[in-house]
Image 1 (cartoon, rainbow, N blue to C red):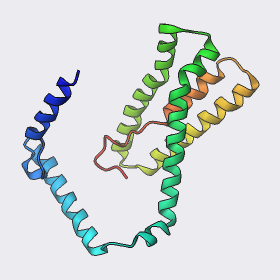
Image 2 (image 1 turned 135 degrees about the vertical axis):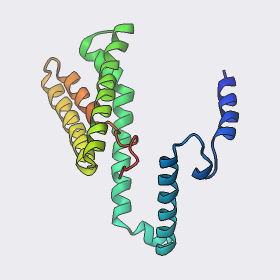
Image 3 (image 1 turned 90 degrees about the vertical axis):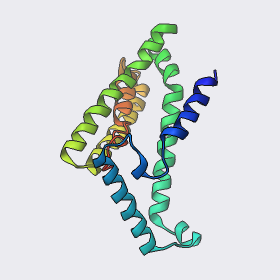
Length: 178
């Protein structure tokens, strides 16, 4: 079982390099872009210098980002871990049928990730795309909760689908992410 991981680990030591200049598997344009970007980041880091730990913890931006990341993680694990149980309660399905139903939101998220990512790359806009995905996610969860209380048919599936569509990290595939 561990042989593929060991082989790939040894292969990565051979293929991956410490500097982008030595990455022969990158195109010359990508190599140049990555080298320039890393040099710019290094220059900015040296210009700003280091700050104290106390000053870092006093930053409102740090706490805001930590809060968003924490809530995102809690919701993600909560929905993904309990999705099969929620769908089983709603649909009454079991076994392979339940697995198939559970995969539907993830397939939709895969399609949305590609569509949103391409649109974001084409327009060069990032913040509105991220915000729209977050709002869609929140609306899907609120819809699922509201319709669950009302015991409406198909409501749970729509809410979970809304969450998964909104919870698409389409920006990992772009060089120009936030």
